[in-house]
Image (cartoon, rainbow, N blue to C red; front, side, top):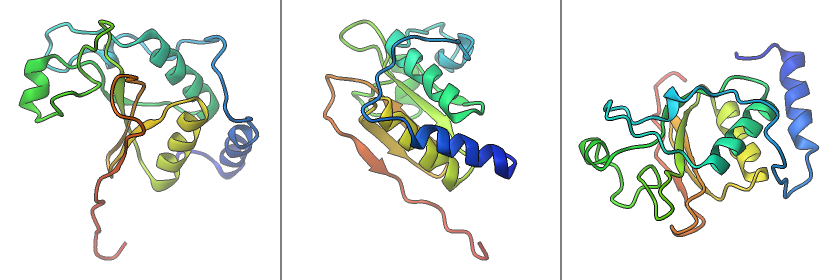
Length: 157
């Protein structure tokens, strides 16, 4: 478990009381170094939309626990190599920024918390799997994207 019970209750109460829609006004703290947002192939592409970065920082603050980015900006070559979507929000968009991140999840509770937090913060495009939650703010792509990937069922769980 990521949190002791009182800390978890506190953090749930904290974001449950945020009125929707919640608008990010300022970025009080930058929790993320540049590295997690760069293309994993090593090409140097790192063009995450500053508005999405601000939303991620606000979400991290509300969650009260680290958020681990497993995928951020992607070059065309790397996206093709991992069989990413042809028009992925991880790729450079019409505004010269990438607009998606994949966040590692450890439990159904974390997954649900992240979905609720980022919905409150204005994110409308999600992909949910057993390993990550994809969030993006790509306004030029169809909205809302809510894609649930089939979860693995492990006997005995």
